[in-house]
Image (cartoon, rainbow, N blue to C red; front, side):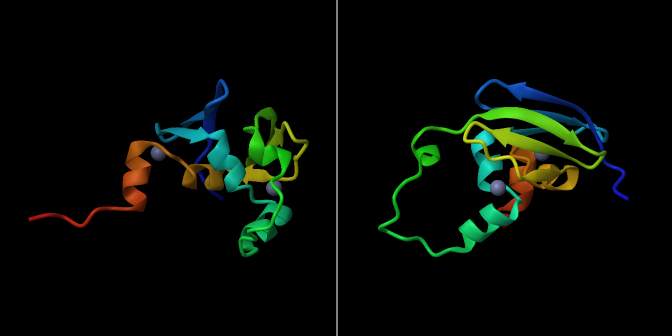
Length: 116
Ligand SMILES: [Zn+2]
Ligand SMILES: [Zn+2]
C-alpha cells in the first residue's frame, strides 16, 4: 500500500493542476501533460501508433483541451473528464506524482552529469 496521499488538489485555471502531498511535496501539472499521459487503454494504444503524416487532426488537437471534472476514484486516484468527452483515464496518485512537473522532480528525471 502506498503511504503517499494527496492532501489537496487545486485547479489552476486553464493552466493545470496543483497537488499538495502528505509528504509536504507540492506538485504542478499542466492539463496538456496530463492528457498526453492519459493511462486509459485507448490513449496508450494511440501513443504506440507510428505517426501518420496523412492523419487528419482531431478537433481536440486544434483547440486546447480543458478538464470538465475531476472525480475521486476510491482512495487511490482521480478520473479526469475532458472537454471532448473523454473520461476513461484514471490517474492513480502514484502516476500523478510521477507526472509532477515541478523543477525539482524535472531535475531528478534528467539529471545533468556533474561538471568538474
Ligand atoms: Zn485516455
Ligand atoms: Zn515535484
